[in-house]
Image (cartoon, rainbow, N blue to C red):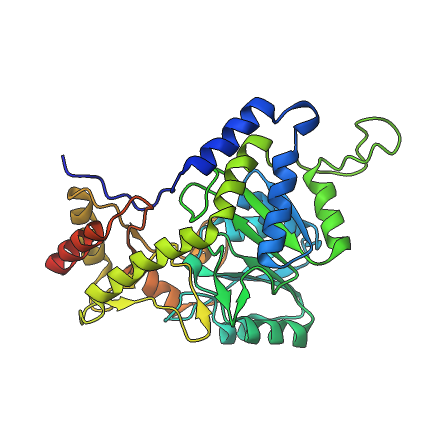
Length: 366
């Protein structure tokens, strides 16, 4: 059987093994949260923000970001229509309404002009996504937010290490969230982190993440509704080791992308999602568009790749079409990407020869 070329997967070295073994052996009693604290400090310093809360998963971090603003039933949040549904559900959990905006055809990140069109008197926040590791257009988004007095939440789940004009994604908005889920660049199996520079906002989020516990009247006393969202020490140990290798992990992703680009840049039926000037993508998921192909043809190509043990994936469906939500705008670019987009394999165990094989098979199918 041919080697499985996986869509995603981690690079694990002796560093990860040693941190996890240490956490298993010694990460208890007085050391029960030492790796959690180290992770929060390390991510804060790496991104360049003041406060961090490590969580079981990024969905929880996003929920903390929304709930601690706070958001409620009378509020609207402008959300990129192209993302994993956790982006929108984190808003929906608060009772606020998601208003879905279109995306940029070149980067698949939220379109600032679409944001402007979606603003109403009820708009309270913008939930943007640094899609597949490419930074959103932060200067324009932050200018819109300042003009209309809106909060900005950066869903940076797949964008660890990415930069916009020399500044790390996750350092622009009122808050940001990263993921350590197993398909991301840096992994801990599951895991996420909430970041902010606002101490009051951080304290509200921290209270929510710890079941609203204050011990104000008795041990284990809770003054308000909360959640059990904080990450475990064992998981944090693996995430910390990965975070300390972030630049090397990103270098590998960027090398894989460059190999893809060299093969596919001159294929007329392919449009490659490539970083814009002044942006540095981590290329978590190298992606392409097949503009001349139908959805059925795109799906057939994915099927044939899988038959060859090459595991690519289709682009996300528009969240505005999900039963939980309502579409206010047509969002034609997100529609096109949904129908014609492909994310290519970029697992850490891929070789340059694996990339060659994927490209050769893809070109043959086209």
